[in-house]
Image 1 (cartoon, helix red, strand yellow):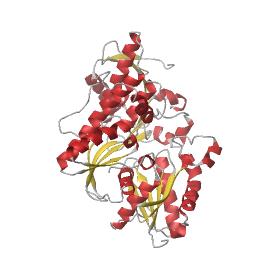
Image 2: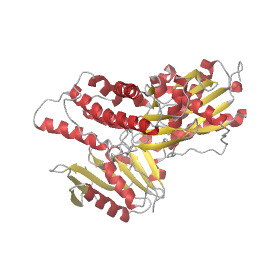
Image 3: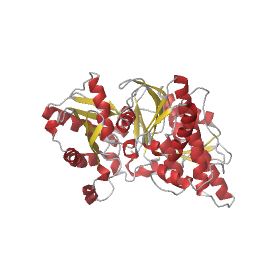
Image 4: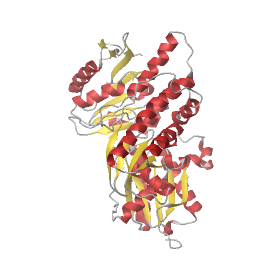
Length: 338
Length: 144
């Protein structure tokens, strides 16, 4: 506690980012530090390598110190530690979980493990302090494409997900074929603004009627076939048109299914989460559809959409308040269901 | 492409992919590694899904590109599904304990295996996947 506020430390290491944040009373961000944003790490050779858990190990103490200092608190002020315990890359997850357990044990602080997707959803509670469940959530990122019904702060039901590639992954792969570079999401979003979304018709894959599942692998192949076909015919490829048409085919399906899920549930709120929530076309499409259907649309700012510690702390706070406690026996689970 | 090709198979459609995957799954034992090498969109994840089905795995098998590896443990043998598309240096995989998977109690299927060929075990089964002449067709060139 500090100044009468309940302080939660949130630790996130499920994939590329080493991220730690301090939250006051579950929804106010005091600090939100992500390794790739700290200048001191640039001295170690530029970009933090992508998958090496060894690098989480090198970063995590620095990120922790920075996060506490920025919040103006010490470990003795922390009331709760929240950590992502799955799903994710096992070696990476273990770094966060081990750090959390060590801190909890050394300082005798309660510990709660949280699901990565619940954290992404919780980012919205920070963005909009009035938001309360129940609502429908659309999670789209490099590794996830899921429609989730959120019943309360700790309970939810996955209604559908991708059967092959995640949205962000399809973007990355198409961006690579178009020679746009990494990460594909922002690059395609940007160049698509100069293209015609109706220039090429890529088939929309809706799967079975009433299914909230997604499939983007076929669309990825269609784009590749189109590019190869044009190249063979000796025609120049208009990258902006391909990007715009691809994006339109993805977002038509994503937006339509999300709205369908909200309508069927009788809910009036749709919450966006995950890195692809920052996509401007998805936001515009959902915005227009939500307005038409009388649905309130929520979306976190970009810094809370990508992996961060604040969303972990928020999810942990509500789990703790509902009476759930983790133990020092806690383990990381690479493929944890929601 | 330096592995010796023992047989070349034409896969006409997804049913052929499934038949191939189911048959291959029946031949696999703990510690086996299957390397899938082929361009985007050649159906590496689809083939892996049918190998999983052949092992008796019921969970959804989707792309592990983002997390590098996904584990499935409810089948006849555990399946470790790798996608090393994002890996820039094979050495990085040692940091996630790759040898515990490759030499472990299950079967490893590795998409984009050409990116990490130098660290694959000697007994690895290679499948090179190419586009066939007709739409939807694939050519499997197998080292076994």
